[in-house]
Amino acid sequence: MMRLHDHPELTRPARLADWIAARLDDGLNVFDHADIYGGGECERLFGDALRTHPLLAKNVRVITKAGIVPANQDRSPWQVKHYRAEAGYLARAIDRALASLAVDQIDTFLIHRPDPLMQADDVARALENAVSAGKVRQIGVSNFLPEQWRWLARNTRLPLVCNQSQLSLGHTDPLFDGTVEAHLADGLRWLAWSPLGGGNLAERMPADVLDRAREETGLDETALAIAWLHQIPGTPLPVLGSMNPDRIHSALHGAQSVLPRPIWYRMLESVRNKAVA
Image 1 (tube, rainbow, N blue to C red):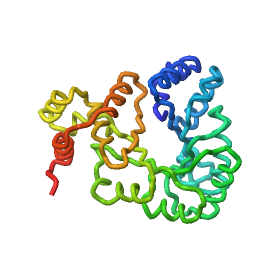
Image 2 (spheres, rainbow, N blue to C red):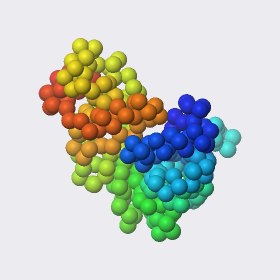
Image 3 (cartoon, rainbow, N blue to C red):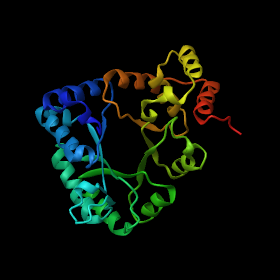
């Protein structure tokens, strides 16, 4: 829901409620938020839509994240972007999110960025308290490296269920540095943000390769990017940034498609501009 403000027509509660209902009809019921999206307004607008149609709230699952303070929200004289993976700060963020989103429970709460100053034991207690109180169903992390999530995991009795991190044809390093395997070994589902690589696959891939892949698979650019991502072991879940229904439907088509292995590797080779070793 980060790009909600890119669609002014959806900032009206009734229109956004209709959009949410249409996504539920598509079989999509998980909506990704963060407390900083839209300067905090995206959570509130989503909540206003659910208040307009309360029955929707029973069918949606909400992911939200906290722990980043943008420079323009820093109340200190320094006006510096920083991280606040602090027990008290995260506990308050959870309460604010519940009120803004108009849901009884956050399905999955994530620490938005690894914080070098995080006291993992204190943070773990705060998250455990939120789960035991029924405010949060499960916890995870976002943009964490393996040893960063492992340190938090060692300090909590709760399982970490996911890591939301960048992965796409436009960002393939994790396929070769052991990050994918670390997710699999530790049982974390990969929630892949920017799965379309910013929507510029056509700029990254030679036109002849893209055209041939489209012709042989019947998939458009969006569907190809999602199908490619979906075949990575562990089946990373794309966190689709687009709110355009046509693009969403293309992504769904891609998620239900399987690319022949040669096409998968040819697409990888073309965006990396080199063959595998």
